Structure formats: C-alpha cells, structure tokens
Image (cartoon, rainbow, N blue to C red):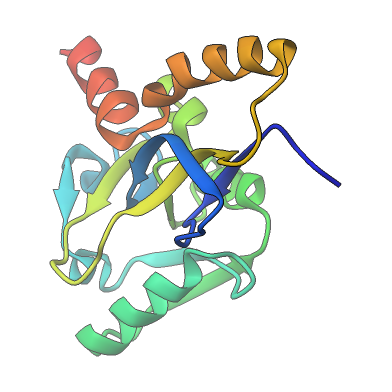
Length: 173
C-alpha cells in the first residue's frame, strides 16, 4: 500500500524519502523522584554501578546501545528485571524497584508529570538516535494529509530531548 507520511525511528537514507522534521532522542537513566542519580542532568554509564537495573529486552532498539556501553566499559550490570514493555519498565521504576534505562522519548509524559526523573547518559561513544517525520518524495500528500502533516510537524520539536526534558527542568526551577 501507499502512505502519505510516516514516523521512522533511526531512518536510513532512502532515495524516495524526504525527511520533513526530525528530533534527537538520547539514552538515559530513569529514577523515582528524589533518587540521587535523578538529581543529575547527565551521568556516565558507570554511575549505575551497584544500582539494581531494569533494562529493555533485546527486541527493543535501545538495547543495542546498552550492550555497547556494557561491553566498552566492562561494567557488570546488576540487572534485576528485563522487559520488552516500556510502560512496565517505567512502572517498576516508579514503584522503587530499581533504576531503568530508556530513551528520552520513552518517558516524556512521566518526566513532565513528575513521576520519574531522567538523567542523560553522557558517555562519548553514545550517539543520539533519530526520530524522523518522512514523506514519499515522489508523491504529493493529499490536502487532508497535508493538514495533519503540518500539525504533526509543528509539534515534532516538542519530542526532542532538549525541548521535552530541559524545559521541564526550567519549569521546576
């Protein structure tokens, strides 16, 4: 079938794809409010040594970045739970079961509601992931699709780490 537009996570270069908007998504620790790690805006992966960790299962895209961090740092993670359900990870963190590792996009709502804190993992080898709003270069969207696309495009920046997480910190200050 054909579509007017799509939202892609980590899009690769395609000849017939036009990126209309994109945001960078970063990996981080999620903690209950008041946790010492959650008081930091960023921390190295090694800051989680000794913490009980709740991590994404291998089927989730961010698990690859966690595996790279674990391998390059030599850190032996204290995994207490692994899940392929982002909401389950966030719920376990909210219940105080441990420290989660997710992307900034995964927990925007919870951070803005004050239910969890997000601390960006600052290791230099990590690169931000990309969420992109794309259209087919060879196809002009319908009028209705153009209206919806414009609305999505206007709100897309609010999904970025800088826009969603840092603006929350400024509102708290």
